[in-house]
Length: 451
Image 1 (tube, helix red, strand yellow):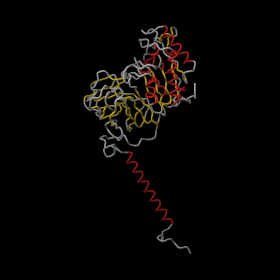
Image 2 (cartoon, one colour; image 1 turned 180 degrees about the vertical axis):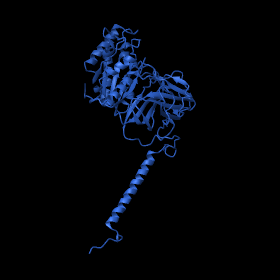
Image 3 (cartoon, helix red, strand yellow; image 1 turned 135 degrees about the vertical axis):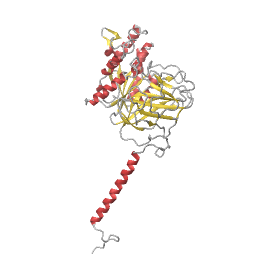
Image 4 (cartoon, one colour; image 1 turned 30 degrees about the horizontal axis):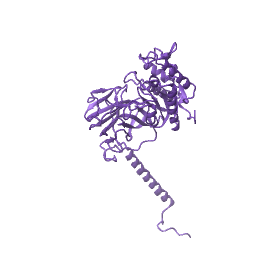
């Protein structure tokens, strides 16, 4: 006869199973309660690792997804008249337009052209209540933190990335990013040709959702150079890298009619329609008016940095970049650069992109006949560069902006319906035509080992 182990007398197998089931149930209930408590954290001082004053904790765990660029603007220079005060004592509310949806967001602030440290003591992000509005949509205001703290100091010549904050950001939304700096810290780093109205208020109005204090309208973006989102819809970023034509010069203000905007809308529509071989990418704009491949403007650091200088920051530094659409060279041509130097610069950018696994779709140079700096010699340089681009020896894929926009009866000039009137930049219709010209299937595919 087998002895029953001590302490097991009188306990049946049925009771064993019941006891085990009860223990498992208790563990599950406790686990769910712990998870729900973490997920529902409201970001109050007790929740924030830095004891922040916000209601939303930017350090809360983010759901699965891919970080992509939803908007960007390259820093261009220091704002005239902001030395040394900067924007001390004022709230700057930048309005930006998103190309991707996400469940969390983060921003980049730049003090590249500051001569002293920039201390931002309060920053926020919210969805705009409507088009061309400085008011926040109800329930969307979120306080931003940096390393868990509500205040951050950005050294002169540097930039800083915020913590992620949970916010449902739709595609094609206007987003308000507001900063407050109490102390003098100039000059202010700006992107001057925003083609978007933003706003300024006196005092710390960072978390004020109302438009009432934001009485001053402005046509530049200050400090803010990127908005990224944690996306379930997009899994990569396309960077549009170029000059004023990419920047959207002459496009309608606050209408998002630059060609990268139109291209983003077209790409989203194609994905929504279930088109085959169309990747789920966001599109961000890294255009700078007046930009050249080869030459920077004067200054320390140089203003309007050359494409070769800024490529690492404005393209390689963006999250999950898969493709760059490169449209540079017109300004080099107008400033007298020869075709060989322009092509050498373009090929250098392509090599840098390839080294980081990024595909390059390159554009032919658009016409400028009728522009005051037009000469036959400069147009001959443009034509030679375009011939080399079309030959397939420069880029992985080619988008022929020149052919799409030129007058078929006088290819030195824009077709009249696409010309903004200055004979150098397209108008809204021309930008839309550019966006429609890009072959969406060119965005897919691996980077070749060498051209």
